[in-house]
Length: 172
Image (cartoon, rainbow, N blue to C red; front, side, top):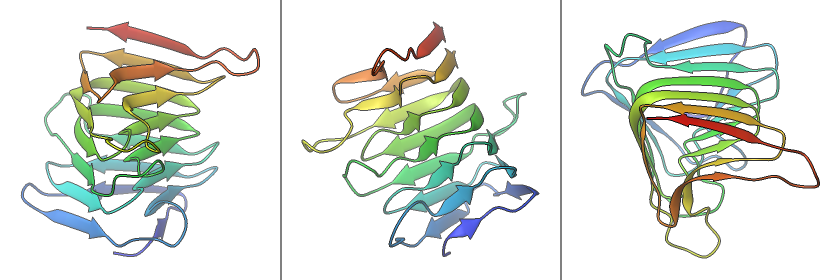
């Protein structure tokens, strides 16, 4: 599968034991959710990519999994580099009971992120990769509830740059 740019409101359902493999992109992620677009990904299948997988741009909305936890979408990236996240969120993302495994940070948040349940693993092992599983940047908001998060140097990093605060609420 090549790069997908979501237009309007779209849903993807991936059946159990199905693996959707995204090819390497010259620049950016395999799935782009731009300003004004909305994407829902459900099912028990897997989306895999060598490099960056999903980019939610400012004003974009992403929902992964069902709130009732009746499914567990799986996501993987396989190249160990700084930009190879499963998800870079600059918009609004809600993740329900997913399983994410990344060779860098699984999630890099610059927007509003809610993670409910699931397993998130960042396996970075090089000096130029983010070594926390979930990172949130200056001016962003993040809520984690009942999620298992594992990273090489730590699970979660919350950064404040130039006086802009970021906030994280963690409830397990």
